[in-house]
Every structure is written in structure tokens, then in C-alpha cells.
Image 1 (cartoon, rainbow, N blue to C red):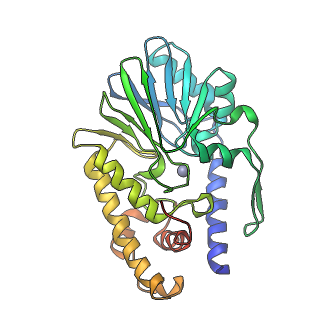
Image 2: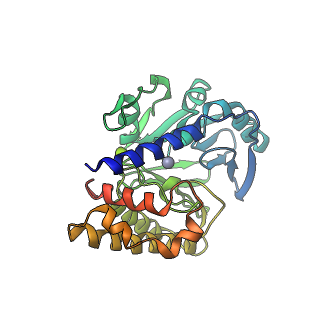
Length: 300
Ligand SMILES: [Zn+2]
């Protein structure tokens, strides 16, 4: 493996976890009505989806443990019912950090099976010399699924799909069929270049395949709750998919021709997107390096 590449990704992940260790005392949870009984909660970390049913509620993701009480309070301000079901869109700490307090409060956690298996083991990364301890048993998903899961929650018909290893190998989207609202987790974000977490099984080819499947599922009226960012539309998802495809194709052409990642970077494969997308925590160069690395992960 390319040492410079590993160093960069190590720095990137360090920055990522540093962000996760910030002070949460000033964070306020904003409640955004989406449609009918569906709401989006924003604080720090990934967007939370809330379905406030007649007697119980369902939550999608939960940001960080120190925010659990505030998130509970925000959900109760919508409807004062217990949160019985909690779905994790993937394993990252800015989406699952509150699993333990919510489970202790009586929520049943659901996730794709790879989320549970990765969270239940110690993750040793010899390249980064970094070890993530296994999550406590109470924080692990209780019910897992492979490719999909369907359930009815009060008057809402809900489908959960895992189409491929994309952002990680445990990504799930939650589609509220009756209301035509989708929560995409981090397979669609609005902060710029997305994070392809090659070390948790993520893959650029799977990413694009996953987005194609989402585009086949939704329509122009669908309200899209991204993993991070404001409410979006199908057109936004399509534009995101198109950009990823353009960049992937350029990097892949170089990869197939046997070029090093440094040589590919000299061709500036993200040039026309850098101004708009380069403001996020993943820069164009990082994105190219992560794509290159992810070609070694099997796509699905
Ligand atoms: Zn993530």
C-alpha cells in the first residue's frame, strides 16, 4: 500500500474523530417538519428521522450520546410517546453514538447485519495504529437484516433497503412509502465530496450503484432527508450521482492504465467541482485517494 496515501487517510480519520469529540453543551436540536408524522431533527452529526406514531415513535439515527436527552426532548415536543424503534443507517459514531442511552430507554435497535458485526468486534487498523473497542452489548442492533426489511408502523408502510456496500458495507436507506419520504443515511449528503469509508467496506462502485437504485425507487415528488444537510429532491440526488460517476470514471481510467494515485491527481479529476464541493471535510484530492483505495474493495 502507498504510505503517503495511508498517512493522508489517517490524518483524515483523525480529523473526523476530533470533530466527534467536540463539546455538545451548546448544541440545540432543531425540529424540521417533513410531511405528515415525519420530522427531521438536526443538531450535531447526521440528520435524524422521526416518525411520531399514535402511541410510539420511530427514530432513524441518533447522533452522539451526550445529545440523547436533548434528542428525546425534541422528539417528545412533537409527540409525547416513547421511542420504541431505532434504525441505524450505518455504523459511524455521528449516527449511532446514542445507541446505548436509547437502548437503555427501551428502544429496539435495527440495522443491516454488517453494522452489528463491525460494532461488536474490536476494529484494529494496523496501518493507522488505531483500535476502536467493541461497542457494549446494549448498544448493538438487536434485529438485523441482509438486503431489505419491511414493516408497517401505524398508517405508514416502510421499506428499508441495503443495495450495496457504498459509504460503508452496512448502509441502509429508509423509505416511507405511504408518505413518499426517504432517509438516505450518508449515501447522499449535501456537504460536498462524500466520504467513501474504504476501511469499513465502502466502495465507490457500490456507492454509484446504490444511488442508481435510490433513483429507481423515488420520484420527483419524493422528499429526501440526506445523511447530512437540508431536505433535498430527486434532482439533487441525480446531480450527486452524476458527479460521482464523472469523477469515478476518470480515476478508474487511470487506475486501469496502471497509473499511481499521484499521477492521476496531476490530471485534476475533480477540478470543476472543487470550488463548490471543496468546502466540506473531504477535499477533492482526498476523495480521489479514497476512490482509488476503494477499487480494491469488492463491489456488490
Ligand atoms: Zn457516515
